[in-house]
Image 1: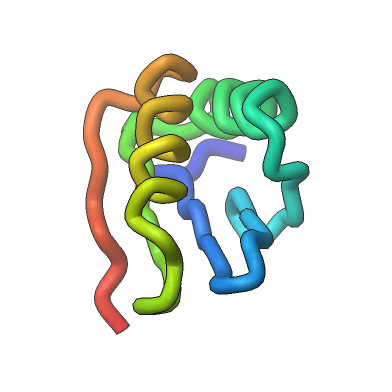
Image 2: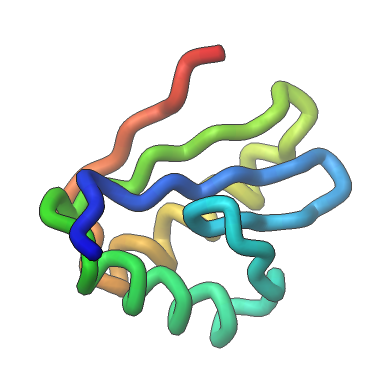
Length: 79
């Protein structure tokens, strides 16, 4: 099924979810899941949701992987 964008949720305990599905935190697992999710999305946008305690370096890493996986844009989810 086609979705509008890909929701990536990051928790302070370093858990990562792509469209509410838990994903391994290593680059290979995350890249694979992001590539698959983006291929089914009508908008190649990654919407990032996370707690304020999530480390910026982790966010930057995830955004870099998303871009490599084909994301054309990014958005931050508001609380």
